[in-house]
Length: 65
Image (cartoon, rainbow, N blue to C red; front, side, top):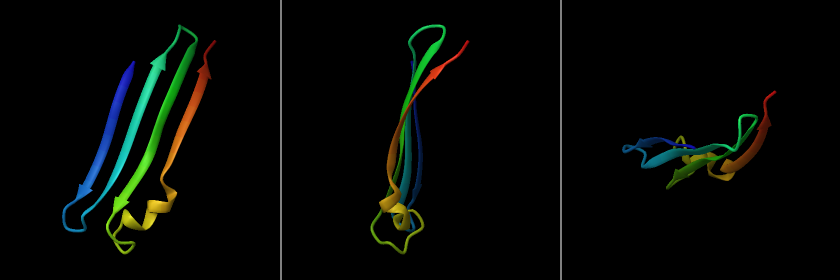
Protein backbone atom coordinates (compact mmCIF):
# COMPACT_ATOMS: atom_id res chain seq x y z
CA UNK A 1 0.00 0.00 0.00
CA UNK A 2 1.21 3.48 -0.84
CA UNK A 3 -0.22 6.55 0.92
CA UNK A 4 0.71 10.04 -0.27
CA UNK A 5 -0.31 13.62 0.42
CA UNK A 6 0.78 16.57 -1.69
CA UNK A 7 0.04 19.93 -0.05
CA UNK A 8 0.57 23.48 -1.21
CA UNK A 9 -0.24 26.30 1.22
CA UNK A 10 -0.01 30.01 0.49
CA UNK A 11 0.32 32.05 3.69
CA UNK A 12 -0.12 35.35 1.86
CA UNK A 13 -3.49 34.33 0.38
CA UNK A 14 -4.39 31.89 3.18
CA UNK A 15 -5.45 29.21 0.70
CA UNK A 16 -4.33 25.65 0.01
CA UNK A 17 -4.41 22.71 -2.38
CA UNK A 18 -4.44 19.15 -0.97
CA UNK A 19 -4.00 16.03 -3.05
CA UNK A 20 -4.36 12.82 -1.02
CA UNK A 21 -3.77 9.50 -2.79
CA UNK A 22 -3.93 5.85 -1.69
CA UNK A 23 -2.79 2.98 -3.91
CA UNK A 24 -3.30 -0.65 -2.92
CA UNK A 25 -2.01 -3.62 -4.88
CA UNK A 26 -4.50 -6.45 -4.29
CA UNK A 27 -2.51 -9.02 -6.29
CA UNK A 28 0.10 -9.15 -9.05
CA UNK A 29 -2.58 -8.09 -11.56
CA UNK A 30 -5.04 -5.86 -9.66
CA UNK A 31 -4.47 -2.36 -8.24
CA UNK A 32 -6.96 0.05 -6.61
CA UNK A 33 -6.42 3.84 -6.54
CA UNK A 34 -8.39 6.34 -4.43
CA UNK A 35 -7.64 10.03 -4.13
CA UNK A 36 -8.88 13.56 -4.40
CA UNK A 37 -8.19 17.17 -5.27
CA UNK A 38 -9.19 19.54 -2.45
CA UNK A 39 -9.07 23.31 -2.83
CA UNK A 40 -9.36 25.58 0.22
CA UNK A 41 -9.49 29.35 0.49
CA UNK A 42 -11.15 32.12 2.46
CA UNK A 43 -12.18 34.10 -0.60
CA UNK A 44 -12.98 33.34 -4.22
CA UNK A 45 -10.39 35.93 -5.22
CA UNK A 46 -7.47 33.80 -3.97
CA UNK A 47 -5.82 31.43 -6.46
CA UNK A 48 -6.94 28.13 -4.90
CA UNK A 49 -10.10 29.61 -3.36
CA UNK A 50 -11.52 30.21 -6.83
CA UNK A 51 -11.49 26.43 -7.45
CA UNK A 52 -13.40 25.38 -4.29
CA UNK A 53 -16.40 24.20 -6.32
CA UNK A 54 -14.16 21.88 -8.34
CA UNK A 55 -13.01 19.84 -5.32
CA UNK A 56 -13.37 16.17 -6.26
CA UNK A 57 -12.58 12.58 -5.35
CA UNK A 58 -11.71 9.73 -7.67
CA UNK A 59 -11.33 5.97 -7.61
CA UNK A 60 -9.94 3.50 -10.09
CA UNK A 61 -9.31 -0.17 -10.57
CA UNK A 62 -6.48 -1.34 -12.81
CA UNK A 63 -5.86 -4.78 -14.25
CA UNK A 64 -2.41 -5.53 -15.64
CA UNK A 65 -1.66 -8.59 -17.71
